[in-house]
Length: 463
Image (cartoon, rainbow, N blue to C red; front, side):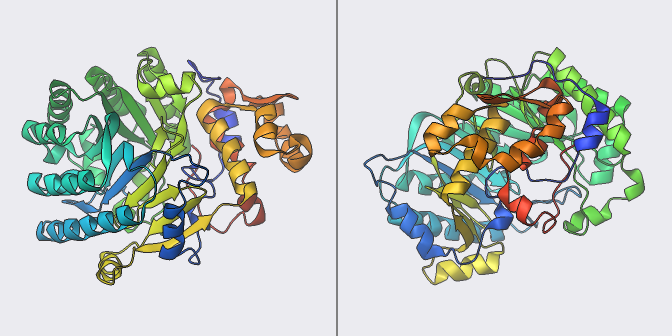
C-alpha cells in the first residue's frame, strides 16, 4: 500500500486543483440523502443484518450537542447553554432511542468501536455520563480492547473527570486545541491555555488511555506562520499519538457563529498555504506519518498500522481501523451506516423529542446504495485511505470492466496525471507525493453525483 513519509508541497499545483468538494466521510455524501428513507427503512436494514449468515460487528456514535460557550469558527450541530437541566432531559430521551434501536437490531450486539462526539460530550455531569454509558452497556456488548473514544474540551475537564472517563471504559481521547496563540483564541472566542491542555493529556496517560489525538485548525483569524509555529512546537511537545490539522472553511452564510469573525482578520490564501506547508514539515520531521487528508499519526499508532496493512477505512468520525462494522448512531443529527444504507436523525431537539414520544425512531433522511454507489464508494475509500487503487481488485469484486465503465473518469484524470498528481497504469492508479494533499480532488472525479449536479451544494475548499 502507498503511504507518504514526505509530501511534495507545490503551491502552484495546490492553487490549480484547489476546488470545493466533499470530505467523503461517506459516499454518497450526506447532501444526497433523501426523505423517502424513513424510520421503517432503517429498521428493515437493522433486521436483515444477518442475511447470508455473516453478522458484522458494531460501531456506535453518540452525539452530545451541548456546549458551555460558542466557538465562532464552529459549524457543528450544537446547542450553547449553561443550563444543565437540558442535558439531563436529553440523556433520558437518548437512553430511550438506544433501547429502541437495540430492540430492532438483529444479529450480534458486539461493539468494537464507540465514539461520543458533539458539541461537547464532557458538558455532561459525571452522573449523566455514567447513566448514558450504563444504557449503552445494557443493550450492547463492548468487547475487550475495543476502540472507545470521546471528544474532550480541556477548558471544562480536570484529572478527576479523566479518571471517570477511564472508569467508564474510554481508552481514546480527542482534545480540541485549534491554536494556542492568545490573539487567535480571542478572535474565535476560545480561550484555552497550554497548561490546562497538558493537564488533560497527562491525566489521560496516567489513566492508561491508548491514544490521545489533538485537533488543530489552520486559516483562523489572526493566524500567521510565526505564531502558528509556536503552537506547533507546543503541540509536538505534548507528544499526541494523532494530530488532525483541519482547514478552516469560512462560510458565514451557512454557519451563523462565523459571522462574528472579521473577514479582514483571515490570513490570505498564500499565508494559509504557508501555514499548511510549515505544519506538514514540522509533523513529518517530528516522526509522524501522513495518514491522509488532514491526519497524522505516530508510526506505532493503530491508524498508521492499519494503513500499512491495508485495513484503513473512512467514516463520519474520519479515519478508522474498522472497515467491516455497521455504524449505529444516536442523538440529534447523528449519521449511521447499516448494510448498504446511510441514515441521519432529525437536527433539532424538539423534532427529536417528538419522534421518541411517539415511539418512532427519529430518522430524518437517508439513502439505500445502488450497485454503482457501492462501486464508487470502494474506489473513493481506496484512494483516500491508501493513495492507491487496484483495478483488478475492483473488477473482481464488482464484476465490471474498469476501463470501459470509467472511460469518462479516466479521461478526466489526464490533466491531473500530466501535472504529476497521480499515475494511471493498466493495473492500478497511484497517487504521487505531489498529489497526496489533493486526494479529495482526485476522488471527486469518481463522484457521479457531482458530475450530474456540480454546483447544488457549497463545499469547503480542499486546501
